[in-house]
Image 1 (cartoon, one colour):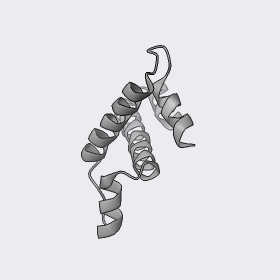
Image 2 (tube, rainbow, N blue to C red; image 1 turned 60 degrees about the vertical axis):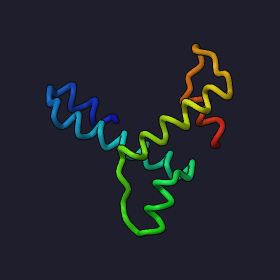
Image 3 (tube, one colour; image 1 turned 90 degrees about the vertical axis):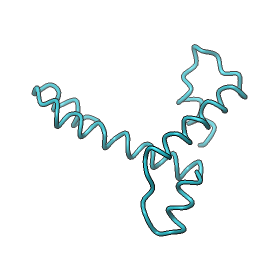
Length: 87
């Protein structure tokens, strides 16, 4: 993400967005593996990559379910709460 910020400071929005996208992609992959999503399981089983869109949808639903079942306060950062749960 630091690289993305550096490119932004230089005024190179295209490179900045590419670097930021790569960071987001890696976060989705890491969470998919850690939470053992169906998309991750299928990718491992078939020895191929999975689509990020599908993984993002599953992650969004799991995070929403977690937030609702945990009755997270709106002032609490849900990403921090999920991180604390999975570590």
